[in-house]
Image 1 (cartoon, helix red, strand yellow):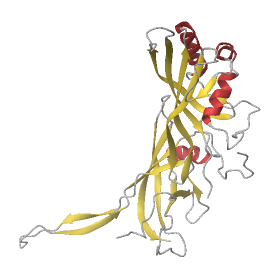
Image 2 (cartoon, one colour):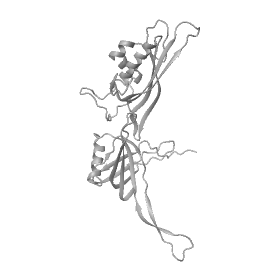
Image 3 (spheres, one colour):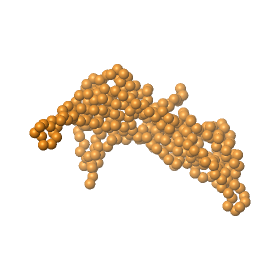
Image 4 (cartoon, helix red, strand yellow):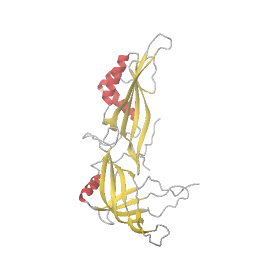
Length: 172
Length: 150
């Protein structure tokens, strides 16, 4: 869908304690960019993560056929938007769940560790969105046994990150 | 049953000036207002002829006026307020109410404002954790009268 109008939200005038680079301008590149897209952009351009996962990031689910591994599925499980007494607080904290999948457990662990090192305690710019802080909340492994008693075992590691990020303030 | 003249907390502002009637500056990144608690002290006036305890009003007291901010030491209003604590500067404050919203709501011609003088006497910083935002609760110790009105 191509939108010809843009959203009316405005960025907060204060960016709290986020330390920006000298050439950074406090803006969101587009009011249409989502945190999910920003995370994927950041990880697919991260030298280690991209080497292991390439661009195999999928929202919610990934087909198990015709696919190289490991692959990562992602979704947002919660968002807490900050509100001040004058309106939107200009930042929110979201939980982004990343599930790393592969028939090879070693691939899962290696990719998960690369993502942890890329994301945990990150602050700065991520895919055009200013990040106050990102921190690892949890990691959980699981395995799915073949339903037919043979075939391939599927391994996964679910890692949840809380990410506090700058968002536009609705402008009425 | 509806409460069309309910005042929403959203839209309240807190501002201050260094001179009475001067140029007021709104406190930035205001998160919440703790409240305004005015009272008139009461004095025991029971006498030997009293059948029950009696008391009479004494001095009016503005009390404290706390409010919380997402703190930024580089924010000009936050930095100024912290400085006023140390300099013990008397400030002039305004609490401005937003207009009521709803069908039949009576909107005043101009915003309702409570005004008073007071010292910003406390700044409590908190939230120095990765999962938190740095916040500051300022407190204003009101001195003298509070004007309820515009």
